[in-house]
Image 1 (cartoon, rainbow, N blue to C red):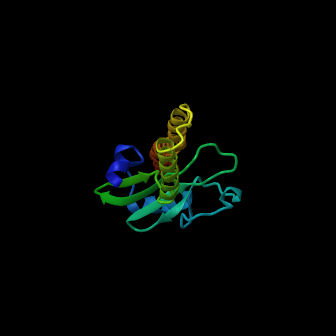
Image 2 (image 1 turned 45 degrees about the vertical axis):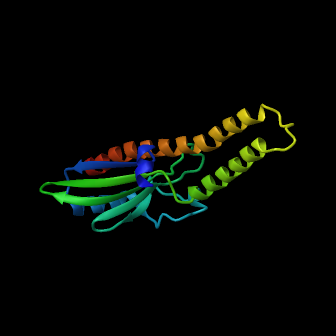
Length: 175
């Protein structure tokens, strides 16, 4: 499944090289990321923090997400999971950014079941009185209901790639 998600750009791997030690990066990470287990927080938008991200970091890896803000139209579904590898005088951050969450399987399953029932009832109706505009409308409706979430998740991954590269370099250069 991960290979399919990589092909449709819902999972992306990036490597970021920084001129910093692992210990210093972990310290910078803890200054700029609020400690959180990344679970569902219904009132997250009402919390106040100067940090843009929430997540956890350990000695060799981290997980983080962008913090949701009130009235923010940038949907932040992407989650970054990374490994920290220190080589000579630089730190290599191997990161996997995933925009697809397992809870989306329920959404997809419900809609696919709905559309299978609708298409089969249209094709196998005994009365034959079903208007012909129903079939193109169903296809058009299915394209929007399944396509828009895909485009939002894909945009979230692209945005997270850009933001992580920019913010990691900013954390290292800022005093």
